[in-house]
Length: 418
Ligand code: EPZ
Image (cartoon, rainbow, N blue to C red; front, side, top):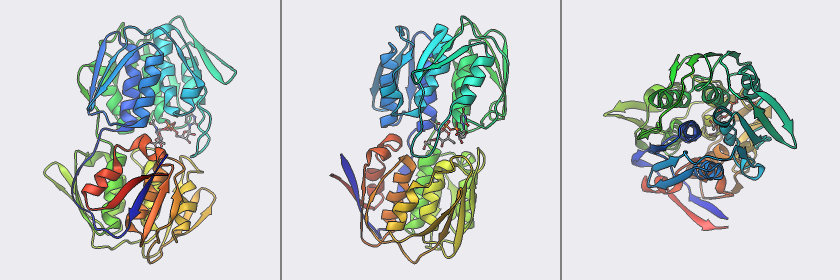
């Protein structure tokens, strides 16, 4: 296993290109189950989760190749509709194959994802939608089994806004008989990316970017040809916070200002200088970090995937901040590690009360989940002294070479064997 070592206090300066979005490419890969032929997806980040999804598609019978950012998925040979536990347990997003397998084969057997470090991750809404589309649902031995000779359209009201729930039901209904309407659908940009790609494959989906999505079933879909994955707004946001923490001046290329309103608004509020300059976003800071409160909400509200990084930023603010987590109420495992670096954080229910301290101090820490590991890397950049972050495989699930990218910007950061 590897650990990341950071010598704090270095100012970040320069230009960085954001990679393709993990949470956009995973549903796009699942969508390839619906077409028989060779799908080509570009701007694909080199991530552990992408390799896991590729392995799952290979187990299902697809041919998958990845070569410097381009993913080729030939799904014509698909002959298996079972996603095994030992793979699903490593990545919850595997549940995204449930809908497309049911649509293609009329049945699927997918291991229930179980919980994870950020909280209990039910899929009741996914299953509710599939049964409304006419699928029989059975749960046994930790697997969910669907069977539906033909899925037929229906109206699906989501009780909660669920990103992969919305994506799973879109993937389930594109080939169904008749029309499907999703009510209270998630409108994250990654959902929009999936709908755009499916329409390119011949699907008939309207309501893009809204919470009411209508899918008119079509007979078949043609393969995705040359579809470019959208940039990762969470990776971009992580660099923005890195710039503020190090009194830096970063030009972040290939990210979409319009997808990042909630975070950009908060960073301006705490004193960052943010401008749009020839296709990129520039983030400068004179070191001022005013305290502020955030509440995580479904898009376009403040993203839960930026909460841990924001907690690091607020740890050295000029006052008291309250971070309230409404999506995953237990998503605070990073708080304990930040406290070991000198942060003053109290957890009260689904909120974290953060009192700014003068500076963080480097320490040996342990990553618990993807975004928590990013928050510890950020803390290491700002801390006085040396920070070590173990279990860095969590980071590699969702960031494409974050440490080497930060090094090109001036950070003193490297990897060592644990
Ligand atoms: C997606 O997870 C993302 N993952 C997560 O990113 C992200 O944090 C989350 O959306 C929220 O934005 C991918 O897209 C692969 P949800 P997802 O279903 O779809 C409850 C990262 O770090 N819920 O939107 O699993 C659920 O418990 C990861 O990149 C139900 O109750 O999240 C949660 O409270 C972490 N029943 C809320 O909805 C269901 O059937 C939102 O969860 C489904 C969800």
